[in-house]
Image (cartoon, rainbow, N blue to C red):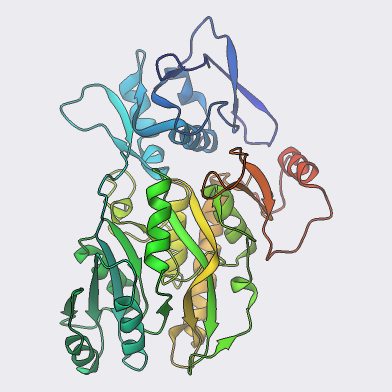
Length: 436
């Protein structure tokens, strides 16, 4: 089926849920149609099971990915997407990589059949949060560590993986005692940034993970506020917020384009539209590693897609931009809560790696590689990049629970109304950057 931007129709049975089951398998008596690349007309988390038929194999990769995103959205936590009909095994093989890509997991034994399961919701009423500190520079480390110890949510562990060439970070860490566990690991050899992040994640024990760079700061209610979002949205993938910029002396600086407020209130944001705005503009307003929080299990090994490293997007490591590699892996698997309040502080100083020309060059090359993957998979096509799909957060602050289009506040406004901009974007046969 061609990827020319025109509406393609995939003839399937698309009936309303019966006892929580939605059948999207191909049948001769199909009573409805699924528009390839479009949405399934069912609410979020409304089905316990969906059935995928052999005809789905005729879809292009782009449309397979979009269909799987929609199936994952409609499934309840723990719900199943089953391959049915004669060629179920072959259909499973052709979809397996992309099912993992969008956040679905192979059925566990002793279950039979071919298909996937959406992760069940975490049920711990008082979950452990791991604050991970990949550290190398002792200059600001004490302030960063103290901001972690000052969290109002106290069921945390602080994991320090020390890449420093002296014992200064170790001495600071051992000087802080108290109710919160500090787990200190000295790297036997320097790992550098990416591998040190990987090590921190590999030794974390918490159900939730919050990175904290050794020169940044967390506001006292950062962990508690973000954890509350995961408690309210059972399939949430990412919680983030606006952040302050501070200088070497901790003075607040004016915003740069990436730290300008992107939303004007707390919102639940569709993950793909959030990622789309970031990658198509090349502007990381989601934030640096210290800004966001996620579930540790979201980085469990995926046998059909992972390439030996946890921080990649469809095989692209996004060198020089570890944060984007993390955020994009998460955002194709689900949605984000974006808090308007600033919950962390990002320090700007002359010693940080981002100030080095070689790191900047790697970051630019990494973002271009990420853009290439995003475009090739057609993930840019549903919405122009200045618009996101959003819902009020928490539910109850507004009468409406419907998804609504919101402009990204920190990006240039469009001269077109939102509905006209979306129509123009979707009906463009070939965008200038789309070479697929």
